[in-house]
Amino acid sequence: MRVRYTAYDRAGAVRKGTVEAVGPEEAAESLRREGLFVSEVSAEGESRGEPVLRRRGGRAKLADVASFMRQLSVLVGTGTPLADAIGALERQLAPGEWRGIVESVRGDLEEGKPLSEAMASHPRAFDPVCRSLVRAGETSGKLEQMLTRLADLTKQQLRIRQQLVGAMVYPCLLVAVSIGVLAVMLLFVLPRFTGLFETLKMPLPPTTKFLMALSGSLTRWWYAYLGGIVAVAVAARVWLGTASGRESLHLALIRMPQVGRMTRGFATARIARLLGVLLESKVPLLDSLVLTREACSNVHYARLLERTQEVVTRGEALSAAIGHGGLIGGGVVEAVRNAERSGRLGPVLTGLADFIDEENQTVLKAVTGLIEPLILLTLGVVVGLVATSMFLPLFDLTAMAGGGPDGGAGGASP
Image (cartoon, rainbow, N blue to C red; front, side, top):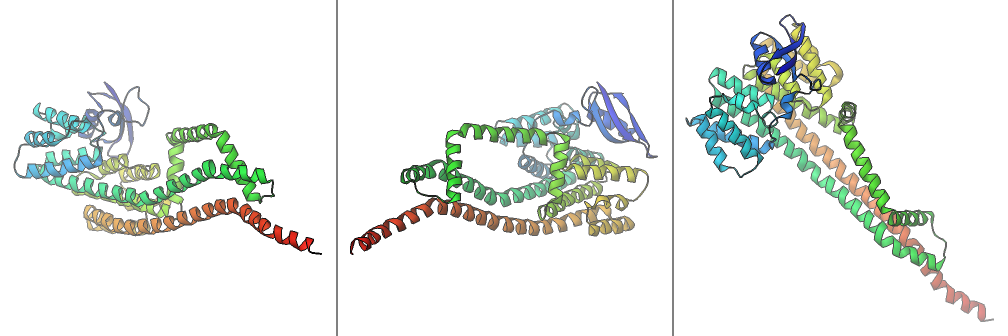
């Protein structure tokens, strides 16, 4: 097939064109052997900037990949042949998509392909960073060490994801309970009071009138409200699927109070960890920047790494580029500058990632500790307002009923 590419030569000039290759992965490898630093590869006819590699192969859970790498590194360390080790892991797996991926990798190995090339057939399961580290291990003869490093990397990524999900479970549960309580009160409880209030024909507070009107509207037109919610959700999903939607969402996440600090911290830690691991694995800096950019989920950080790649290609220092835009903190930039002077960029970046992750845990606890009482307070105020609006007319009715007989007796005594 014809594969379109964008690359940089050693002088920093942009090179664009097409090559004939079996696939984008082979084309990228061929271009690297020619001394080019590949930025983007895609099959002719595909949308620009959407690598074909991301659309082929099956998906895999991060937990499956982390467990696979850990067990594979142990088996390879004991001297087990690679194909036999993967075959042993395959037999332990339950039938499903992940087992099919592992079976396919084992089959490619038995045909004589290297592990990195076998993984390249499933890019949605094994990302470019994973394949690059495996390729570096195969080239240097230190596959076991690279598999161990890759297992640690995926385990750390899984741990961070579990922390984020675990921290959001309780707030999401509170929001769901709040919505459920309000729906029950408006759809089932308040209509019973509405009939009573209409029978008594008594004056009602403004809040009670508003809730009665809202309850009546929801009861009569619930399908219209439900359709509107579904339409808004679908429109939001479609908008977030566009480039402008993702850019707006990612920018909001970066700039939001507290949440923005947490977002910047996690993104910085991931970039530092990936760059550190790749550089310690003897992957060239420009290739490391490309791989890290491909693994970056936030479009603004991906653009920062793309600009950094261009600056480094011109021969300037890494620290001179990553500080632009305020996405990377000044302390991290200074640490990178000192690491470049000492020639220990990889270990320093890995150490920075560990330090930032510790800070991120503190920030995450602070943010969730702030969100939970706010949700509880909001829920208490709303439920209290609804309850007061329903029962206040009843209190007035009770007061009137209690004062009626006394007033009547007092008028008849003369």
